[in-house]
Image (cartoon, rainbow, N blue to C red; front, side, top):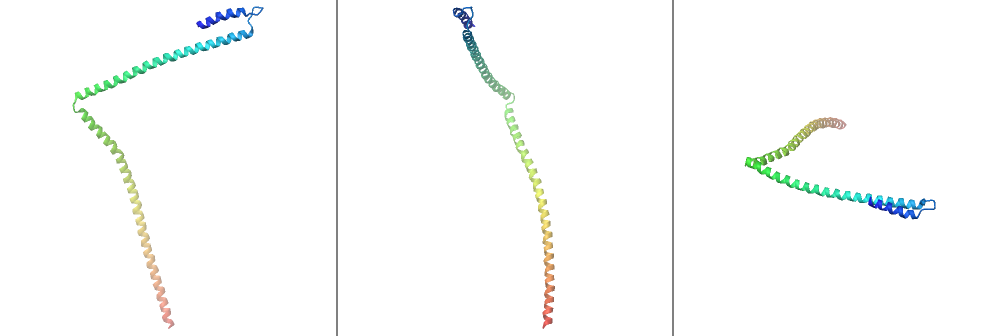
Length: 170
């Protein structure tokens, strides 16, 4: 602001000497004045922005410092709380550890049980398919035996007929 006031004062005195015969500033002088005012306003705005940014960083650093202290205090209080808990029941921590291990075992058993059930179901399905195919095979073997027996019987009949036919030729 002071720069603008100083500029305005010095500008009017310098421009007063540069006035044309009818008492007006030339267009070029007005443009120069406007440009100088714009530059001054921009530099003032930038200076203010830098000051705001600097203050913002200071506040941010203070907040981060406070957060760090708060974290340390939280950790310290958590340790004190843990010590208080241990004082109530000396075996409480051991009991809690055993309970955690039991919970972990239960969590591990659950998917294993599901996997076992799934595999049992798959096993039953495959066993059913196996039994079905075994029955089908047994039927096919039986049919094959019947066909072979029939084929053998028919060939024997043909052989006997051929033998009779050969015997009748003698």
